[in-house]
Length: 273
Ligand code: ADP
Ligand code: MG
Image: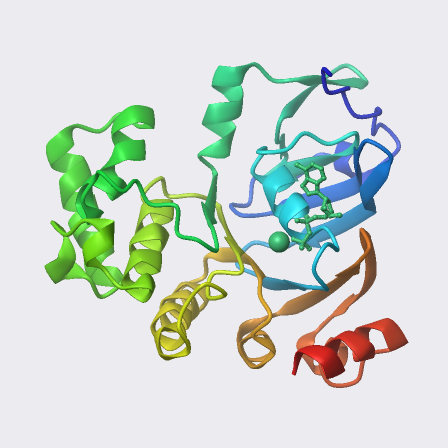
């Protein structure tokens, strides 16, 4: 079925002029259903430029769906998502929102980088070829420029000596670090991580978290879905707890992770730690 445009948000704060600050994400009144199953219920979040936000919640609570909506891998049924004031997936014409054309979706999606649980590298491309693929297709750069940038990124994730390795020749931790470099290659305003360490052997988790920590300290706006509560409490500026498609609780990690106000949050923490 054709996705319906979200309801007009003329009465929401999203309609106020937003100064162009890189990495500002505004999620306003977002609803999403699969058939009768409402998986996101009236989600509103504001993520400031440079903020590190971690998204926690039990399996099936809607975390991946929300990240996918921010990257326009999913359409939404109502509400709006903007990055630096630009609608993701929709554009405003007068009071109404209309779906963007495919080409515009691709263009706006380049502003959001995404790193998946299972790395999702192209198996037939080397590490460096994986990184230059998107910039060559979507940015005005030539191959030499793309390769130079990719080498810088590989260095940044500690893999300068693995440029010509294929994914199967790399450990899971190394593959995930290539995936992070690939996501950075389009110089996104926001980087999304969906359980980036869940598929890794325990001894490989640290190297990936340390790359993410570097990005956090470097001022990149990050939204991270993770069950690594210790890591979340160390790097997050803001923690959001989702359950059954609802934001149950949000706030600084000292509160949400140490002294949550909601029983549901505490139950989840007891279970996960
Ligand atoms: P989480 O990432 O928190 O585990 P998800 O966002 O993956 O949760 O899923 C939220 C709910 O949406 C679940 O009930 C899941 O079964 C459902 N869901 C996710 N993707 C689809 C889809 N493509 N079609 C139908 N239902 C889906
Ligand atoms: Mg998920």
